[in-house]
Amino acid sequence: MVNLTIDGKEIQVNEGMTLLGAAGKAGVDIPTLCWMKGLNDIASCRVCLVECDGELVASCNTPVREGMVVNTATPRVVAARRANVQTLMEGHRYECGTCVRQETCALRTLASEFNVSDSQFYLPEKAPWDESFPLIRDASKCIKCMRCVAECSKVQYCSVWEHSGSGPNMNVFAKDGLPIDAAGCALCGQCITHCPTGALTARDDTGKVMEALLDPEVMTVVQVAPAVRAAWGEGVGVAREDATPGRMASALRALGFDKVFDTDFAADLTIMEEGSEFVEFLGSDKPRPMFTSCCPGWVRFAKLHYPQFVAQLSSAKSPHQMEGAVVKNTLAAEADEAGKRIFVVSIMPCVAKKYECDVPQLATEKGSDVDAVLTVREFDRMLKMFRVDCGALEETDWDSPLGLSTGAGTIFGRTGGVMEAALRSAVFLITGENPDFSACDTTDSTPEKPWVSKHLEVAGTPVDIAVASGLGNTAKLLDALEAGEVHFDFVEIMACPGGCVGGGGQPIEFNKELAVERAANLNALDEADTLRYSHENPDVQKLYEDWVGKPLSHTSHEWLHTDQQTWDI
Ligand code: SF4
Ligand code: SF4
Ligand code: SF4
Image (cartoon, rainbow, N blue to C red; front, side, top):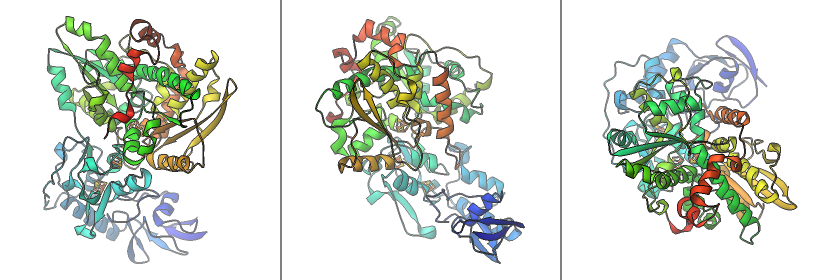
Protein backbone atom coordinates (compact mmCIF):
# COMPACT_ATOMS: atom_id res chain seq x y z
CA MET A 1 0.00 0.00 0.00
CA VAL A 2 1.05 3.59 -0.65
CA ASN A 3 0.19 6.62 1.52
CA LEU A 4 -0.34 9.99 -0.11
CA THR A 5 -2.25 13.25 0.31
CA ILE A 6 -4.70 14.55 -2.28
CA ASP A 7 -6.20 18.00 -1.74
CA GLY A 8 -5.36 17.71 1.95
CA LYS A 9 -6.94 14.25 2.34
CA GLU A 10 -4.62 11.50 3.52
CA ILE A 11 -5.35 8.22 1.74
CA GLN A 12 -3.89 4.79 1.29
CA VAL A 13 -4.13 3.01 -2.07
CA ASN A 14 -2.62 0.01 -3.83
CA GLU A 15 0.84 0.38 -5.28
CA GLY A 16 0.69 0.82 -9.07
CA MET A 17 -2.52 2.81 -9.00
CA THR A 18 -2.51 6.09 -10.96
CA LEU A 19 -3.11 9.50 -9.42
CA LEU A 20 -6.42 9.61 -11.29
CA GLY A 21 -7.49 6.35 -9.70
CA ALA A 22 -6.32 7.50 -6.26
CA ALA A 23 -8.22 10.79 -6.64
CA GLY A 24 -11.35 8.83 -7.53
CA LYS A 25 -10.91 6.80 -4.33
CA ALA A 26 -10.56 10.01 -2.35
CA GLY A 27 -13.77 11.38 -3.90
CA VAL A 28 -11.89 14.05 -5.85
CA ASP A 29 -13.12 14.65 -9.41
CA ILE A 30 -10.50 15.32 -12.09
CA PRO A 31 -11.62 16.16 -15.66
CA THR A 32 -10.47 13.80 -18.42
CA LEU A 33 -10.82 13.68 -22.17
CA CYS A 34 -8.53 11.20 -23.95
CA TRP A 35 -8.35 8.74 -21.05
CA MET A 36 -10.29 5.46 -21.22
CA LYS A 37 -10.01 3.13 -18.26
CA GLY A 38 -7.66 0.26 -19.03
CA LEU A 39 -7.47 1.20 -22.71
CA ASN A 40 -6.03 4.65 -23.27
CA ASP A 41 -3.69 6.47 -20.90
CA ILE A 42 -1.50 8.33 -23.39
CA ALA A 43 -2.15 11.71 -21.73
CA SER A 44 -2.32 13.46 -25.09
CA CYS A 45 -5.03 15.94 -24.09
CA ARG A 46 -3.33 17.07 -20.81
CA VAL A 47 -6.71 17.88 -19.32
CA CYS A 48 -6.18 15.70 -16.25
CA LEU A 49 -3.12 17.65 -15.07
CA VAL A 50 -2.53 17.95 -11.33
CA GLU A 51 0.23 19.56 -9.29
CA CYS A 52 2.45 17.13 -7.51
CA ASP A 53 5.48 18.16 -5.46
CA GLY A 54 5.74 21.39 -7.48
CA GLU A 55 5.41 19.70 -10.91
CA LEU A 56 2.45 19.54 -13.27
CA VAL A 57 1.83 15.89 -14.20
CA ALA A 58 -0.88 13.98 -16.08
CA SER A 59 -2.85 12.13 -13.44
CA CYS A 60 -4.06 9.40 -15.83
CA ASN A 61 -0.65 7.80 -16.25
CA THR A 62 1.37 8.91 -13.22
CA PRO A 63 1.64 6.15 -10.62
CA VAL A 64 1.26 6.94 -6.92
CA ARG A 65 4.38 7.15 -4.78
CA GLU A 66 4.80 7.02 -1.01
CA GLY A 67 4.40 10.43 0.61
CA MET A 68 3.20 12.29 -2.51
CA VAL A 69 1.36 15.56 -1.94
CA VAL A 70 -1.07 16.22 -4.77
CA ASN A 71 -3.22 19.27 -5.46
CA THR A 72 -5.86 19.00 -8.15
CA ALA A 73 -7.31 22.50 -8.27
CA THR A 74 -4.59 25.13 -7.74
CA PRO A 75 -4.67 28.24 -9.98
CA ARG A 76 -1.66 26.82 -11.82
CA VAL A 77 -3.48 23.53 -12.50
CA VAL A 78 -6.66 25.25 -13.63
CA ALA A 79 -4.77 27.69 -15.89
CA ALA A 80 -2.80 24.82 -17.48
CA ARG A 81 -5.93 22.73 -18.05
CA ARG A 82 -7.69 25.72 -19.55
CA ALA A 83 -4.76 26.43 -21.89
CA ASN A 84 -4.78 22.82 -23.03
CA VAL A 85 -8.52 22.82 -23.72
CA GLN A 86 -8.04 26.09 -25.61
CA THR A 87 -5.29 24.52 -27.75
CA LEU A 88 -7.56 21.56 -28.53
CA MET A 89 -10.38 23.90 -29.51
CA GLU A 90 -8.07 25.89 -31.78
CA GLY A 91 -7.17 22.80 -33.80
CA HIS A 92 -10.77 21.62 -34.04
CA ARG A 93 -13.43 22.70 -36.55
CA TYR A 94 -15.62 24.61 -34.17
CA GLU A 95 -19.14 24.41 -35.54
CA CYS A 96 -21.18 23.30 -32.54
CA GLY A 97 -24.44 24.73 -33.84
CA THR A 98 -24.58 22.21 -36.69
CA CYS A 99 -22.76 19.33 -35.04
CA VAL A 100 -24.81 16.23 -34.12
CA ARG A 101 -22.68 15.85 -31.00
CA GLN A 102 -23.32 19.36 -29.69
CA GLU A 103 -25.08 18.16 -26.53
CA THR A 104 -22.87 15.15 -25.92
CA CYS A 105 -19.50 16.56 -27.02
CA ALA A 106 -16.98 16.22 -24.20
CA LEU A 107 -14.73 18.90 -25.73
CA ARG A 108 -17.56 21.45 -25.89
CA THR A 109 -18.48 20.65 -22.28
CA LEU A 110 -14.88 21.25 -21.18
CA ALA A 111 -14.61 24.45 -23.24
CA SER A 112 -17.68 25.71 -21.48
CA GLU A 113 -16.44 24.57 -18.06
CA PHE A 114 -13.07 26.28 -18.60
CA ASN A 115 -14.65 29.43 -20.03
CA VAL A 116 -12.81 29.13 -23.35
CA SER A 117 -14.40 31.99 -25.23
CA ASP A 118 -11.44 34.07 -26.31
CA SER A 119 -9.69 31.84 -28.87
CA GLN A 120 -8.76 32.74 -32.42
CA PHE A 121 -10.25 29.58 -33.81
CA TYR A 122 -8.35 28.06 -36.68
CA LEU A 123 -10.74 26.06 -38.84
CA PRO A 124 -8.94 23.12 -40.41
CA GLU A 125 -10.08 22.02 -43.87
CA LYS A 126 -12.36 19.02 -44.14
CA ALA A 127 -10.65 16.03 -45.74
CA PRO A 128 -12.54 14.08 -48.43
CA TRP A 129 -14.62 11.18 -47.11
CA ASP A 130 -17.06 8.70 -48.66
CA GLU A 131 -20.24 10.23 -47.28
CA SER A 132 -22.31 7.27 -48.48
CA PHE A 133 -20.57 4.96 -45.99
CA PRO A 134 -22.51 4.57 -42.71
CA LEU A 135 -19.46 5.65 -40.65
CA ILE A 136 -18.46 9.27 -41.24
CA ARG A 137 -15.14 10.77 -40.17
CA ASP A 138 -14.54 14.50 -40.15
CA ALA A 139 -10.80 14.88 -39.61
CA SER A 140 -11.21 18.61 -39.02
CA LYS A 141 -12.98 17.82 -35.73
CA CYS A 142 -10.45 15.22 -34.58
CA ILE A 143 -8.48 16.15 -31.47
CA LYS A 144 -6.08 13.17 -31.80
CA CYS A 145 -7.09 11.64 -28.50
CA MET A 146 -6.65 8.07 -29.87
CA ARG A 147 -9.77 6.76 -28.16
CA CYS A 148 -11.04 5.38 -31.49
CA VAL A 149 -7.69 3.69 -32.11
CA ALA A 150 -7.80 2.04 -28.67
CA GLU A 151 -11.45 0.98 -28.93
CA CYS A 152 -11.17 -0.45 -32.43
CA SER A 153 -7.90 -2.31 -31.86
CA LYS A 154 -8.04 -3.33 -28.18
CA VAL A 155 -11.76 -4.01 -27.73
CA GLN A 156 -13.03 -4.78 -31.22
CA TYR A 157 -9.86 -6.30 -32.75
CA CYS A 158 -10.47 -4.66 -36.12
CA SER A 159 -7.53 -2.20 -36.05
CA VAL A 160 -9.09 0.05 -38.65
CA TRP A 161 -7.51 3.25 -37.35
CA GLU A 162 -3.83 4.13 -37.47
CA HIS A 163 -1.88 7.18 -36.47
CA SER A 164 1.38 8.79 -37.47
CA GLY A 165 3.47 11.65 -36.12
CA SER A 166 3.24 13.11 -32.65
CA GLY A 167 2.08 16.26 -30.87
CA PRO A 168 0.44 18.80 -33.17
CA ASN A 169 1.62 16.83 -36.22
CA MET A 170 -0.23 13.69 -35.22
CA ASN A 171 -2.67 12.27 -37.74
CA VAL A 172 -5.32 9.56 -37.47
CA PHE A 173 -6.51 7.76 -40.60
CA ALA A 174 -7.91 4.46 -41.85
CA LYS A 175 -5.16 1.84 -41.97
CA ASP A 176 -2.70 1.88 -44.85
CA GLY A 177 -4.44 5.00 -46.13
CA LEU A 178 -7.24 2.76 -47.48
CA PRO A 179 -10.74 4.07 -48.18
CA ILE A 180 -12.88 3.25 -45.16
CA ASP A 181 -14.96 0.65 -47.02
CA ALA A 182 -11.79 -1.36 -47.68
CA ALA A 183 -10.19 -1.00 -44.24
CA GLY A 184 -11.81 -3.97 -42.47
CA CYS A 185 -14.47 -2.00 -40.58
CA ALA A 186 -17.26 -4.17 -39.14
CA LEU A 187 -19.44 -1.08 -38.66
CA CYS A 188 -20.02 -1.84 -35.01
CA GLY A 189 -19.98 1.92 -34.33
CA GLN A 190 -17.99 1.57 -31.10
CA CYS A 191 -15.43 4.15 -32.22
CA ILE A 192 -18.32 6.58 -32.69
CA THR A 193 -19.71 6.09 -29.20
CA HIS A 194 -16.22 6.45 -27.71
CA CYS A 195 -15.15 9.53 -29.71
CA PRO A 196 -15.46 12.58 -27.43
CA THR A 197 -16.31 14.94 -30.30
CA GLY A 198 -18.22 14.96 -33.59
CA ALA A 199 -15.17 13.67 -35.51
CA LEU A 200 -16.82 10.25 -35.84
CA THR A 201 -20.54 10.00 -36.48
CA ALA A 202 -23.06 7.72 -38.13
CA ARG A 203 -24.41 8.81 -41.53
CA ASP A 204 -27.50 10.93 -40.94
CA ASP A 205 -30.53 9.47 -42.74
CA THR A 206 -33.19 11.61 -41.07
CA GLY A 207 -33.58 13.68 -44.29
CA LYS A 208 -34.53 10.56 -46.23
CA VAL A 209 -37.13 9.68 -43.61
CA MET A 210 -38.53 13.23 -43.54
CA GLU A 211 -39.00 13.09 -47.33
CA ALA A 212 -41.01 9.89 -46.96
CA LEU A 213 -43.12 11.38 -44.16
CA LEU A 214 -43.90 14.39 -46.35
CA ASP A 215 -44.84 12.34 -49.43
CA PRO A 216 -48.62 11.73 -49.65
CA GLU A 217 -47.99 8.76 -51.95
CA VAL A 218 -46.00 6.91 -49.34
CA MET A 219 -47.26 4.62 -46.58
CA THR A 220 -44.64 5.02 -43.86
CA VAL A 221 -44.05 2.01 -41.64
CA VAL A 222 -41.69 2.17 -38.69
CA GLN A 223 -40.31 -0.64 -36.53
CA VAL A 224 -38.24 -0.45 -33.37
CA ALA A 225 -35.54 -2.93 -32.27
CA PRO A 226 -35.65 -4.61 -28.84
CA ALA A 227 -32.68 -2.66 -27.40
CA VAL A 228 -34.10 0.75 -28.35
CA ARG A 229 -36.76 0.58 -25.62
CA ALA A 230 -34.02 0.43 -23.00
CA ALA A 231 -32.24 3.60 -24.15
CA TRP A 232 -34.37 5.96 -26.26
CA GLY A 233 -35.36 8.10 -23.28
CA GLU A 234 -31.72 8.93 -22.46
CA GLY A 235 -31.40 11.32 -25.41
CA VAL A 236 -34.67 13.13 -24.74
CA GLY A 237 -34.38 13.45 -20.99
CA VAL A 238 -36.99 10.86 -19.99
CA ALA A 239 -36.12 8.70 -16.96
CA ARG A 240 -35.61 5.01 -17.70
CA GLU A 241 -38.72 3.95 -15.78
CA ASP A 242 -40.87 6.46 -17.71
CA ALA A 243 -39.43 5.67 -21.15
CA THR A 244 -41.77 2.71 -21.64
CA PRO A 245 -42.36 0.85 -24.91
CA GLY A 246 -45.95 2.18 -24.95
CA ARG A 247 -44.72 5.77 -24.71
CA MET A 248 -42.20 5.07 -27.47
CA ALA A 249 -45.03 3.83 -29.72
CA SER A 250 -46.87 7.10 -29.05
CA ALA A 251 -43.71 9.11 -29.78
CA LEU A 252 -43.43 7.40 -33.17
CA ARG A 253 -47.05 8.23 -33.93
CA ALA A 254 -46.30 11.85 -33.01
CA LEU A 255 -43.68 11.84 -35.79
CA GLY A 256 -46.42 10.94 -38.27
CA PHE A 257 -45.67 7.32 -39.18
CA ASP A 258 -48.70 5.51 -40.62
CA LYS A 259 -47.94 2.16 -38.99
CA VAL A 260 -45.92 1.53 -35.87
CA PHE A 261 -44.56 -1.98 -35.38
CA ASP A 262 -42.28 -3.67 -32.90
CA THR A 263 -39.23 -5.55 -34.22
CA ASP A 264 -39.69 -7.80 -31.15
CA PHE A 265 -42.39 -9.49 -33.26
CA ALA A 266 -39.75 -10.35 -35.86
CA ALA A 267 -37.35 -11.40 -33.11
CA ASP A 268 -39.93 -14.06 -32.23
CA LEU A 269 -40.18 -14.94 -35.91
CA THR A 270 -36.38 -15.21 -36.09
CA ILE A 271 -36.48 -17.70 -33.23
CA MET A 272 -39.06 -19.82 -35.05
CA GLU A 273 -36.83 -19.89 -38.13
CA GLU A 274 -33.40 -20.08 -36.49
CA GLY A 275 -34.63 -22.49 -33.79
CA SER A 276 -36.07 -24.80 -36.48
CA GLU A 277 -32.84 -24.49 -38.46
CA PHE A 278 -30.88 -25.46 -35.34
CA VAL A 279 -33.08 -28.48 -34.69
CA GLU A 280 -32.41 -29.66 -38.29
CA PHE A 281 -28.73 -28.83 -37.87
CA LEU A 282 -28.48 -30.94 -34.69
CA GLY A 283 -29.60 -34.01 -36.60
CA SER A 284 -27.13 -33.37 -39.41
CA ASP A 285 -23.39 -33.96 -39.75
CA LYS A 286 -22.68 -30.33 -40.70
CA PRO A 287 -19.52 -28.82 -39.18
CA ARG A 288 -20.09 -27.41 -35.67
CA PRO A 289 -21.02 -24.88 -34.48
CA MET A 290 -23.92 -23.10 -36.11
CA PHE A 291 -23.63 -19.34 -35.52
CA THR A 292 -26.47 -16.84 -35.06
CA SER A 293 -26.77 -14.30 -37.87
CA CYS A 294 -28.98 -11.57 -36.43
CA CYS A 295 -26.11 -9.08 -35.89
CA PRO A 296 -24.88 -7.52 -39.14
CA GLY A 297 -21.76 -6.21 -37.37
CA TRP A 298 -20.84 -9.81 -36.60
CA VAL A 299 -21.74 -10.99 -40.11
CA ARG A 300 -19.50 -8.25 -41.58
CA PHE A 301 -16.71 -9.15 -39.15
CA ALA A 302 -16.94 -12.83 -40.14
CA LYS A 303 -16.91 -12.02 -43.85
CA LEU A 304 -13.99 -9.61 -43.49
CA HIS A 305 -11.82 -11.29 -40.88
CA TYR A 306 -12.92 -14.94 -40.46
CA PRO A 307 -14.38 -15.99 -43.85
CA GLN A 308 -13.73 -19.65 -43.00
CA PHE A 309 -16.75 -19.53 -40.66
CA VAL A 310 -19.25 -17.86 -43.03
CA ALA A 311 -20.69 -21.17 -44.24
CA GLN A 312 -21.65 -21.93 -40.62
CA LEU A 313 -23.80 -18.82 -40.17
CA SER A 314 -27.54 -19.36 -39.83
CA SER A 315 -29.31 -18.39 -43.04
CA ALA A 316 -31.91 -16.37 -41.07
CA LYS A 317 -31.98 -12.66 -41.91
CA SER A 318 -31.76 -10.23 -39.00
CA PRO A 319 -35.10 -9.48 -37.31
CA HIS A 320 -35.61 -5.99 -38.79
CA GLN A 321 -34.98 -7.32 -42.30
CA MET A 322 -37.52 -10.09 -41.62
CA GLU A 323 -40.06 -7.56 -40.34
CA GLY A 324 -39.45 -5.41 -43.42
CA ALA A 325 -39.94 -8.37 -45.78
CA VAL A 326 -43.15 -9.38 -43.99
CA VAL A 327 -44.47 -5.79 -44.05
CA LYS A 328 -43.74 -5.30 -47.74
CA ASN A 329 -45.33 -8.61 -48.71
CA THR A 330 -48.36 -8.70 -46.42
CA LEU A 331 -49.32 -5.01 -46.66
CA ALA A 332 -48.74 -4.72 -50.42
CA ALA A 333 -52.44 -5.04 -51.30
CA GLU A 334 -53.48 -2.46 -48.70
CA ALA A 335 -50.88 -0.02 -49.99
CA ASP A 336 -51.85 -0.63 -53.63
CA GLU A 337 -55.49 0.03 -52.81
CA ALA A 338 -54.54 3.34 -51.23
CA GLY A 339 -52.35 4.17 -54.25
CA LYS A 340 -49.25 4.29 -52.08
CA ARG A 341 -45.87 2.65 -51.94
CA ILE A 342 -44.50 1.28 -48.67
CA PHE A 343 -41.44 2.86 -47.05
CA VAL A 344 -40.06 0.91 -44.08
CA VAL A 345 -37.96 2.69 -41.47
CA SER A 346 -36.04 0.77 -38.79
CA ILE A 347 -35.09 2.52 -35.55
CA MET A 348 -32.04 0.58 -34.44
CA PRO A 349 -29.26 0.74 -31.82
CA CYS A 350 -26.93 -0.09 -34.65
CA VAL A 351 -24.73 1.41 -37.38
CA ALA A 352 -24.15 -1.87 -39.26
CA LYS A 353 -27.86 -2.09 -40.07
CA LYS A 354 -27.54 1.05 -42.18
CA TYR A 355 -25.24 -0.94 -44.43
CA GLU A 356 -27.29 -4.16 -44.16
CA CYS A 357 -30.50 -2.63 -45.54
CA ASP A 358 -28.67 -1.71 -48.76
CA VAL A 359 -27.33 -5.23 -49.47
CA PRO A 360 -29.04 -6.13 -52.79
CA GLN A 361 -29.02 -9.87 -52.06
CA LEU A 362 -31.27 -9.33 -49.05
CA ALA A 363 -34.07 -7.78 -51.13
CA THR A 364 -37.18 -9.72 -52.19
CA GLU A 365 -39.28 -9.18 -55.33
CA LYS A 366 -40.98 -6.33 -53.42
CA GLY A 367 -37.66 -4.49 -53.26
CA SER A 368 -35.43 -3.75 -50.25
CA ASP A 369 -36.86 -5.11 -47.02
CA VAL A 370 -36.01 -1.84 -45.26
CA ASP A 371 -35.68 1.60 -46.87
CA ALA A 372 -33.93 3.54 -44.12
CA VAL A 373 -32.30 2.79 -40.79
CA LEU A 374 -32.09 5.44 -38.09
CA THR A 375 -29.94 5.07 -35.01
CA VAL A 376 -31.48 5.83 -31.61
CA ARG A 377 -29.55 9.11 -31.69
CA GLU A 378 -31.25 10.08 -34.98
CA PHE A 379 -34.63 9.04 -33.55
CA ASP A 380 -34.04 11.24 -30.51
CA ARG A 381 -33.00 14.14 -32.76
CA MET A 382 -36.26 13.79 -34.71
CA LEU A 383 -38.27 13.78 -31.48
CA LYS A 384 -36.59 17.05 -30.55
CA MET A 385 -37.23 18.54 -34.02
CA PHE A 386 -40.91 17.70 -33.66
CA ARG A 387 -40.87 19.05 -30.10
CA VAL A 388 -42.49 15.87 -28.79
CA ASP A 389 -42.97 16.06 -25.03
CA CYS A 390 -42.09 12.38 -24.62
CA GLY A 391 -42.48 12.17 -20.85
CA ALA A 392 -46.06 13.48 -21.06
CA LEU A 393 -47.24 11.04 -23.75
CA GLU A 394 -49.98 8.51 -23.03
CA GLU A 395 -48.94 4.92 -23.65
CA THR A 396 -50.36 3.24 -26.78
CA ASP A 397 -50.14 -0.27 -28.24
CA TRP A 398 -48.18 -1.28 -31.31
CA ASP A 399 -50.16 -1.73 -34.50
CA SER A 400 -51.43 -5.21 -35.16
CA PRO A 401 -50.83 -7.89 -36.40
CA LEU A 402 -47.04 -7.35 -36.78
CA GLY A 403 -46.54 -5.72 -33.41
CA LEU A 404 -47.29 -8.34 -30.77
CA SER A 405 -44.25 -9.97 -29.18
CA THR A 406 -43.03 -12.06 -26.26
CA GLY A 407 -40.40 -11.55 -23.58
CA ALA A 408 -38.15 -13.86 -25.60
CA GLY A 409 -38.15 -11.28 -28.41
CA THR A 410 -37.39 -8.46 -25.98
CA ILE A 411 -34.19 -10.04 -24.60
CA PHE A 412 -32.71 -10.16 -28.12
CA GLY A 413 -31.38 -6.73 -27.25
CA ARG A 414 -28.77 -7.99 -24.79
CA THR A 415 -25.93 -10.47 -25.04
CA GLY A 416 -27.16 -14.03 -24.53
CA GLY A 417 -30.75 -13.09 -25.27
CA VAL A 418 -30.94 -14.64 -28.73
CA MET A 419 -29.46 -17.89 -27.42
CA GLU A 420 -31.84 -17.90 -24.46
CA ALA A 421 -34.87 -17.22 -26.65
CA ALA A 422 -33.73 -19.85 -29.17
CA LEU A 423 -33.26 -22.48 -26.46
CA ARG A 424 -36.70 -21.76 -24.97
CA SER A 425 -38.24 -22.66 -28.35
CA ALA A 426 -35.72 -25.23 -29.67
CA VAL A 427 -36.26 -27.37 -26.55
CA PHE A 428 -40.02 -27.09 -27.11
CA LEU A 429 -39.66 -28.07 -30.77
CA ILE A 430 -37.70 -31.19 -29.78
CA THR A 431 -39.54 -32.27 -26.61
CA GLY A 432 -42.97 -30.66 -27.02
CA GLU A 433 -42.54 -29.10 -23.58
CA ASN A 434 -41.47 -25.64 -22.51
CA PRO A 435 -38.16 -25.68 -20.62
CA ASP A 436 -37.54 -23.83 -17.35
CA PHE A 437 -36.23 -20.32 -17.91
CA SER A 438 -33.25 -21.08 -15.67
CA ALA A 439 -32.22 -23.95 -17.97
CA CYS A 440 -31.73 -21.45 -20.79
CA ASP A 441 -30.20 -18.64 -18.71
CA THR A 442 -26.96 -17.16 -20.11
CA THR A 443 -26.60 -14.15 -17.85
CA ASP A 444 -23.49 -15.24 -15.95
CA SER A 445 -21.32 -13.28 -18.37
CA THR A 446 -18.54 -11.19 -16.82
CA PRO A 447 -16.13 -8.79 -18.53
CA GLU A 448 -13.22 -11.08 -17.59
CA LYS A 449 -14.64 -14.03 -19.51
CA PRO A 450 -14.44 -13.72 -23.31
CA TRP A 451 -17.43 -16.04 -23.67
CA VAL A 452 -20.07 -17.86 -21.63
CA SER A 453 -20.67 -21.56 -22.28
CA LYS A 454 -23.22 -24.10 -21.13
CA HIS A 455 -23.83 -27.83 -21.50
CA LEU A 456 -27.43 -29.00 -21.90
CA GLU A 457 -29.10 -32.36 -22.41
CA VAL A 458 -32.14 -32.00 -24.68
CA ALA A 459 -34.18 -35.22 -24.95
CA GLY A 460 -30.97 -37.18 -24.39
CA THR A 461 -28.98 -35.18 -26.95
CA PRO A 462 -25.98 -33.25 -25.58
CA VAL A 463 -25.95 -29.62 -26.70
CA ASP A 464 -23.04 -27.28 -26.01
CA ILE A 465 -23.64 -23.59 -26.50
CA ALA A 466 -21.55 -20.44 -26.20
CA VAL A 467 -22.28 -16.72 -26.18
CA ALA A 468 -19.84 -13.88 -26.88
CA SER A 469 -20.24 -10.15 -27.32
CA GLY A 470 -17.68 -7.63 -28.52
CA LEU A 471 -15.50 -8.50 -31.49
CA GLY A 472 -12.31 -8.96 -29.44
CA ASN A 473 -14.07 -11.64 -27.41
CA THR A 474 -15.47 -13.06 -30.63
CA ALA A 475 -11.99 -13.30 -32.15
CA LYS A 476 -10.74 -15.18 -29.07
CA LEU A 477 -13.63 -17.64 -29.32
CA LEU A 478 -13.16 -18.17 -33.06
CA ASP A 479 -9.43 -18.73 -32.59
CA ALA A 480 -10.14 -21.31 -29.86
CA LEU A 481 -12.68 -23.06 -32.12
CA GLU A 482 -10.23 -23.11 -34.99
CA ALA A 483 -7.46 -24.49 -32.80
CA GLY A 484 -9.80 -27.26 -31.63
CA GLU A 485 -9.48 -26.10 -28.01
CA VAL A 486 -13.26 -25.87 -27.58
CA HIS A 487 -16.28 -27.50 -29.16
CA PHE A 488 -19.76 -25.99 -29.39
CA ASP A 489 -22.94 -26.80 -31.29
CA PHE A 490 -24.55 -23.37 -31.28
CA VAL A 491 -22.89 -19.98 -30.78
CA GLU A 492 -24.43 -16.53 -30.39
CA ILE A 493 -22.29 -13.55 -31.35
CA MET A 494 -23.13 -9.87 -30.97
CA ALA A 495 -20.56 -7.38 -32.26
CA CYS A 496 -21.10 -4.74 -29.59
CA PRO A 497 -19.94 -5.26 -26.00
CA GLY A 498 -23.02 -6.33 -24.02
CA GLY A 499 -25.02 -6.78 -27.26
CA CYS A 500 -27.30 -4.20 -28.86
CA VAL A 501 -27.91 -2.47 -25.51
CA GLY A 502 -24.29 -1.32 -25.90
CA GLY A 503 -24.78 -0.74 -29.64
CA GLY A 504 -22.90 1.80 -31.72
CA GLY A 505 -26.17 3.62 -32.52
CA GLN A 506 -27.27 4.13 -28.92
CA PRO A 507 -27.27 7.49 -27.09
CA ILE A 508 -23.83 8.59 -25.92
CA GLU A 509 -22.89 9.53 -22.39
CA PHE A 510 -19.21 10.38 -22.08
CA ASN A 511 -17.19 7.67 -20.30
CA LYS A 512 -20.29 5.74 -19.25
CA GLU A 513 -20.91 2.17 -20.37
CA LEU A 514 -24.66 1.70 -19.95
CA ALA A 515 -25.12 -1.77 -21.47
CA VAL A 516 -25.61 -3.57 -18.15
CA GLU A 517 -28.17 -1.05 -16.88
CA ARG A 518 -30.10 -1.18 -20.14
CA ALA A 519 -29.99 -5.01 -20.18
CA ALA A 520 -31.56 -5.08 -16.72
CA ASN A 521 -34.44 -3.07 -18.17
CA LEU A 522 -34.97 -5.67 -20.94
CA ASN A 523 -34.80 -8.53 -18.43
CA ALA A 524 -37.46 -6.82 -16.31
CA LEU A 525 -39.72 -6.43 -19.36
CA ASP A 526 -39.24 -10.13 -20.19
CA GLU A 527 -40.06 -11.21 -16.64
CA ALA A 528 -43.17 -9.03 -16.58
CA ASP A 529 -44.45 -10.34 -19.92
CA THR A 530 -47.33 -12.82 -19.93
CA LEU A 531 -45.89 -14.40 -23.10
CA ARG A 532 -42.26 -15.53 -22.81
CA TYR A 533 -41.82 -18.17 -25.52
CA SER A 534 -41.58 -17.11 -29.17
CA HIS A 535 -43.59 -20.14 -30.35
CA GLU A 536 -46.51 -18.90 -28.19
CA ASN A 537 -46.77 -15.55 -30.00
CA PRO A 538 -50.31 -15.66 -31.50
CA ASP A 539 -49.46 -13.13 -34.23
CA VAL A 540 -46.44 -15.18 -35.32
CA GLN A 541 -48.65 -18.29 -35.40
CA LYS A 542 -51.18 -16.38 -37.53
CA LEU A 543 -48.47 -15.20 -39.94
CA TYR A 544 -47.55 -18.84 -40.51
CA GLU A 545 -51.22 -19.83 -40.96
CA ASP A 546 -52.07 -17.01 -43.36
CA TRP A 547 -48.87 -16.42 -45.31
CA VAL A 548 -45.70 -18.38 -44.63
CA GLY A 549 -46.94 -21.93 -43.98
CA LYS A 550 -44.33 -23.18 -41.57
CA PRO A 551 -40.74 -22.41 -40.53
CA LEU A 552 -38.22 -23.13 -43.32
CA SER A 553 -41.02 -23.35 -45.93
CA HIS A 554 -40.52 -22.11 -49.49
CA THR A 555 -42.05 -18.70 -48.63
CA SER A 556 -40.02 -18.52 -45.47
CA HIS A 557 -36.84 -19.05 -47.50
CA GLU A 558 -37.88 -16.36 -49.96
CA TRP A 559 -38.79 -13.76 -47.36
CA LEU A 560 -36.83 -14.56 -44.23
CA HIS A 561 -33.56 -16.25 -45.20
CA THR A 562 -30.49 -15.52 -47.29
CA ASP A 563 -27.58 -17.55 -48.53
CA GLN A 564 -24.81 -15.87 -46.53
CA GLN A 565 -22.14 -17.15 -48.89
CA THR A 566 -23.51 -15.55 -52.03
CA TRP A 567 -22.68 -11.98 -51.14
CA ASP A 568 -19.52 -10.13 -50.22
CA ILE A 569 -18.93 -6.97 -48.26
S1 SF4 B 1 -11.63 10.55 -34.31
FE1 SF4 B 1 -12.47 11.05 -32.28
S2 SF4 B 1 -11.73 9.38 -30.98
FE2 SF4 B 1 -10.49 9.33 -32.81
S3 SF4 B 1 -8.68 10.50 -32.33
FE3 SF4 B 1 -10.14 11.90 -33.33
S4 SF4 B 1 -11.30 12.84 -31.67
FE4 SF4 B 1 -10.25 11.05 -30.82
S1 SF4 C 1 -17.08 0.96 -36.51
FE1 SF4 C 1 -16.11 -0.65 -35.22
S2 SF4 C 1 -14.81 -1.77 -36.64
FE2 SF4 C 1 -15.36 0.13 -37.68
S3 SF4 C 1 -13.68 1.52 -37.24
FE3 SF4 C 1 -15.23 1.85 -35.64
S4 SF4 C 1 -14.68 0.49 -33.93
FE4 SF4 C 1 -13.53 -0.16 -35.75
S1 SF4 D 1 -24.61 -5.94 -31.46
FE1 SF4 D 1 -26.55 -5.00 -32.09
S2 SF4 D 1 -26.05 -2.86 -32.32
FE2 SF4 D 1 -24.09 -3.94 -32.34
S3 SF4 D 1 -23.64 -4.33 -34.53
FE3 SF4 D 1 -24.73 -6.11 -33.69
S4 SF4 D 1 -26.88 -5.77 -34.16
FE4 SF4 D 1 -25.83 -3.81 -34.35
